[in-house]
Length: 204
Image (cartoon, rainbow, N blue to C red; front, side, top):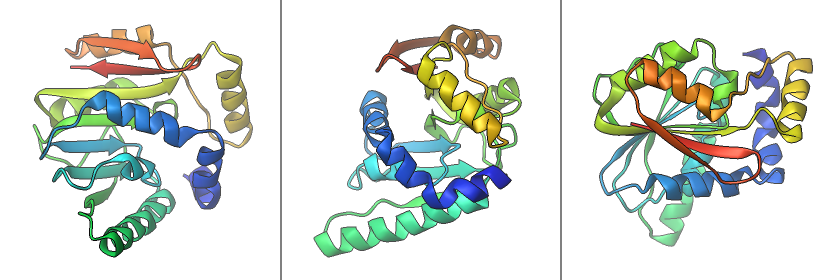
């Protein structure tokens, strides 16, 4: 995880420059969260998705990531969001931070209505094992939402090359290939592109 220890201090700035917050907002809108639901953001890093989640719906949120450096940034973000909510007298969003990889989640069976993986799956090892774990922790009827880059685009190839040179291999997948992996563990799936290079895949 040395790569993420290095990039953690500048990660949020880089994501803001690339418009990551806008695609995260579209992902949250796509999920169509309901009051009181539970959400696990897997590979959630610095907790950027917290900025897009409503604080007045009583959501149960867990951010899971294997990098303590990234989770430290998420912890700072939670404190800021809580302070902002108090200043505006609006309900705050509570979240738990868990240091874990996707293929070994220290979480109970049938715990979540939604699991999200936003611009992170290309860093995962053991993807099929991760999908098995996700199926375990999802409630019956729960959904997995993956937002990822299409590997055939120039922008994605640039990202893969840059991250590889920095010592962090990035393996991007076409949605059909991910879908085939998901079907092996009992999911059905569909997907749509939200930009020319980014798609959202939903599995249930």
